[in-house]
Image (cartoon, rainbow, N blue to C red; front, side, top):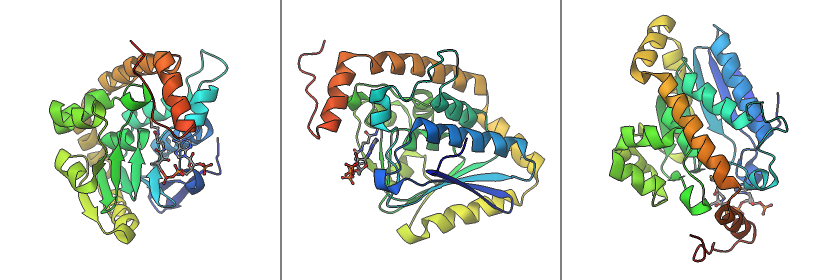
Length: 260
Ligand code: COA
């Protein structure tokens, strides 16, 4: 599936996948997830692709899931037996054998952050921020972030983001361990592309084997995604999520005082 809001281009052996919906802060709709999943699946199939670079147009990396899509049920397929596009994208991330590199300029929210835990190299601009406000939206972490972030950062530091919902800056993200290098805003795209080109020029089988050894058991990651997904779906139908979603749309703070 193609989407005008996801651009996919080749730079020789690098597949460049860019969020391209800057007027909505690159918030990701179901159609965009499908395009992202298609691109990642194609990258895995095509021997000519040796690395994938995620990047974005505009002043933000991505504001995460499109909240309107959530509220209208647009994120779920009509056929309940069909894998939702968001899950196709997440499974493709979890199973990716090609190196994934991200160039994060500006803010990243929700899945815009959790997808980074599946990337092998992450470059962030000095003004980048990272925010996973799942609990504040009455939701739970996704993309196996409840497994991967504690592994990367340790439980308490992961709780700073996942439980407390604290927005952190690029320097703190580097301290937590999921950003390799903080660069000037205008140098972010180049830093990502240079790293992607360098890794794409290396021996492909050795790169694939090394990534597989480092990533370990992908089935465990996929299982956690499914477990999180079940809670996430249940929360989407909850009264507390209705309150959080309405508050976002009405640009006010949610009131959870009456929820048990
Ligand atoms: N879903 C749908 N629309 C979104 C969105 C999202 N996740 N994030 C931003 N947008 C839209 C806004 O509604 C606004 O649309 P409008 O111009 O039609 O009113 C537009 O993008 C610009 O956003 P705005 O909020 O005006 O920009 P900002 O710079 O003041 O704030 C954010 C940017 C990212 C801090 C803020 O938009 C935000 O908090 N978004 C929600 C992030 C979120 O909770 N994501 C889900 C995580 S699970």
